[in-house]
Image (cartoon, rainbow, N blue to C red):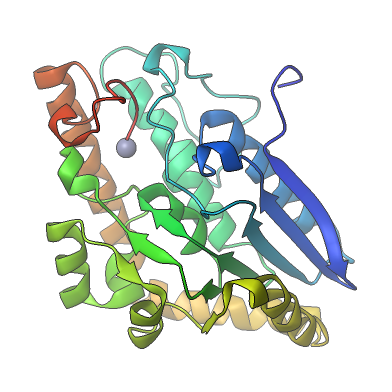
Amino acid sequence: MSDTPSYILYDNPAEHVARITLNRPAQANSQDTHLLYQLNEAFDRAAHDDDVHVIILAANGKHFSAGHDLIEPLEDYPQNMGEHRTVFPLCGFGCAGAASQMAREEEIYLGFSERWRNIPKPTIAAVQGKCIAGGLMLVWPCDLIIASEDARFSDMTVTLGVGGIEYFTHVWEIGIRKAKEMLFTSDEFTAQQAQDWGMVNQVVPREALSQAAVDMAVKIARKPPFALKLVKKALNGSVDAQGRDIAMQNAFHLHQLAHTHNLKLYDQLIDPSGLSPAIRKGSG
Ligand code: ZN
């Protein structure tokens, strides 16, 4: 990765607070393979540093994230970069058929997002502008979400011939009725709607976003870290007891079926009729 530009910034805006910032603003912080591995390394750094009690995830530029980088050509994907970083062993990165694509998505999409969700420290997402599809896979794993008034959220994967992002927690984030509307229509919703539905903790003016996230982090960072770790485990466990993991695995496998279907029909992972003409090959 030494020839690769760094897409992630890392700083400590307050005592016991680490801030990880997506820094690919010219591409609206779209996530290619390198960005995701760099982001995972930054989360590891913050998680392993005992002096860090709270982690903020922010983004530079107008938009939080345009989602997965659909321009990154399939044949150029770096496969299995370094050691496996997910909590479960994976295989098949070099295999034919659907195997390699599934292994890749198990690691860098579902695997990474679930891994970040289970970091034993509170995490806070600070979101502005568009947060599209794969962008939700960075925001939803965070424990708290602070959005600026201009934030807009959407999962338009059905338009691209795939039934939802790989980290399929829509129902737990906004409830089943709104999840169906979100996915069936591909419509975006506002920061205020997200707060009304319980997905967002605070909505603040754009210029106040960064400080609001730091203020929240500082407040939490004063609490005993081990108590925070334990209560996060208890809270996440209470959601898992509702069957979240099994439901998410089921949706992930249906997602893989959609990719395979699209590969047979269109020779790419998504239905190109839902793409802008400028984008014709890519992931999903
Ligand atoms: Zn996918």
